Image 1 (cartoon, rainbow, N blue to C red):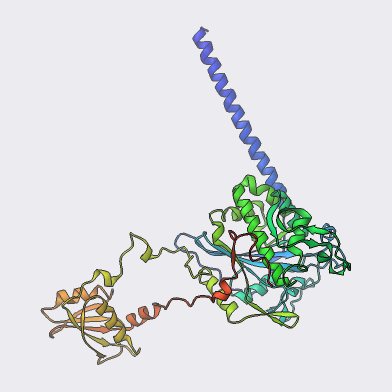
Image 2: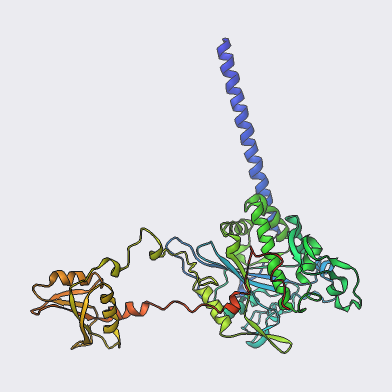
Length: 495
């Protein structure tokens, strides 16, 4: 073999060696990722979907692009079983109770999301729920909200019952439910190396445990702090010594903490490298519905949120008022709030359905009145239905396009299904121009002079579909909302 042959052979060998290294590296990566996913899958616990109500709200329809709203119920359990007793104290016993509940609505445009906090002491109607003995509980009107999670008195709680209660309250179908306990929350904060939050004032041992009988040492110093593990848990659990000492005030700090956690994760990059350690920490103490019962599904859901700006992730507490030692949800304000979510409108009334707004795109067709010029064309308008006021509405439409209305009246017959445009022998061109404002109308030549418009039931239907703009939510409610981009030292409590 010549020198050139040996060089070519060495080059091919080196090339094969490099390719082999690359292939081995990919295999190792794939194997490592597979091992991690298997580990995460082993961590995850699921609850039985048999406990979900048989009378549930319908699933939100998908738009033309396959996008739909996603509703995720987030439950923080304060069970003291296992490792949780070390973090939260074991005196309260092992029965699972919901300490925090947030319904997260991710809009179909995947650019907006809002989390609704439900006060744990609020009075709600709890529907029938499946108990450990296989029986269903009776309806419980005006029951304390967090008692739904305790139905059955088990350490793991009853997330299906809480989901049933939220669906009945909101009219929204909950797509996924996630329950995390003390240990899981503490581990998550450590996995991201702490979260920067604002402590409104010094927090003492006596604030954390009012039964202590004395003030004790400072547990959390006022000001900006990087908190993880036990200290992060102390921050979201404390309610005494801050603001009005209420549970509802504490929820505001929980919203602030979640905002900071989301900001930290997004700042590090919404990718598997960031999310896998977080998922590993969370899944050790996570219970989810069967639809999220695998690492890949959890990861997919997490990655679906990466395009939402912090300013478009909002948190708000369901409208409430005190009712003695308990809390009443304020109706109809709470119904209007959930109505906005069902309509996929943000708290500010912005359409986040993901549908293309014809008025806001340069390629969309302009409105009919903007492209039709009826100047100099006279039209008589008649109502051919039994629906009052249609002639006037039709007259307003054609006046806006420059037509002259010679009068409005009731047609001889009021059983017209389809709108018709009648015209004389010399007025076909005028009738054709008018027809541009009424797609689908029948053009009818008659031995008359001029043009008549006889509106039918099709126009009545289209007029009814033209709804007035939705009534905005009261500013007293929307001003309470905080976005994930809000100053961390603002809106931390009532009082």
